[in-house]
Image: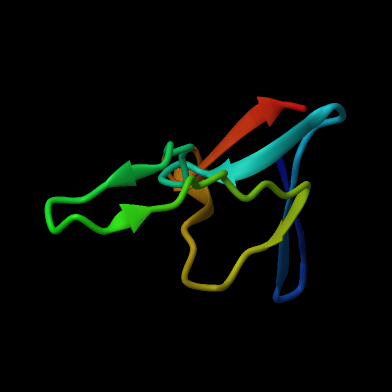
Length: 70
């Protein structure tokens, strides 16, 4: 992953052949919760480019995002 900054614009780019997801966005199979509700299967959302807000600390990106092979 690399961060590109230009003025107030901050951009997080994945390396070639990889994509980025939030570290907390993980695959979850379909399951039933304790109330009997069916929770559908969840697939993580991936991106190759993320616009970072000013509040994001770019020194802690490894704690927020994971880069994986496509």
